[in-house]
Image 1 (cartoon, helix red, strand yellow):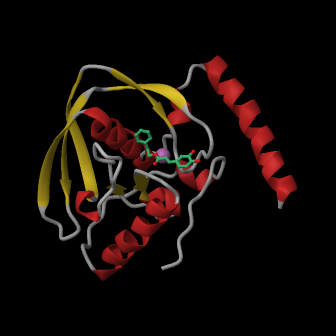
Image 2: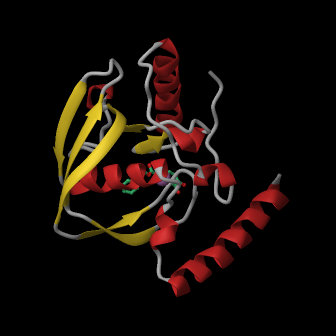
Length: 174
Ligand code: QAP
Ligand code: CO
């Protein structure tokens, strides 16, 4: 499967993803294709819609204490439902679909996630720290929401200006 990362302002990123119903070979091929894309671009999380697949799929590989991302730590999360949102935390987020831009974003500190794995089995996860933040960020993608949508309007305008300049520079370099 030949997938590539869609970048803002691509409108596809605004699509709402639909629930996965078939836990078949096609789903496994999508998941298997997403993993190297995430790793090769230095990502820690990637949602299906970021590679043009509007299904409730996300993968996460949070670095450990040594900054390593062994494949054993890969989480494949299908049809997630977030509950028990508690506390508040701020983290400087980025996104593979909004390259080279990072900004502080407020999230819930801890959450509970019910989801299905690649075989359709029900799973349950209690998350805090970076995993909780990453899950909320990726879950937003399933609703067509980007982290830049959470900026104050003045910060958002500054982002749009900076990002347009970056896009122009990129085009000129091609
Ligand atoms: C989402 O983001 C996330 O701009 C995953 O040039 C972000 O993997 C979860 C990346 C923050 C938790 C906290 C971004 C790589 C990777 C870039 C990513 C870039 C290269 C972003
Ligand atoms: Co993202």
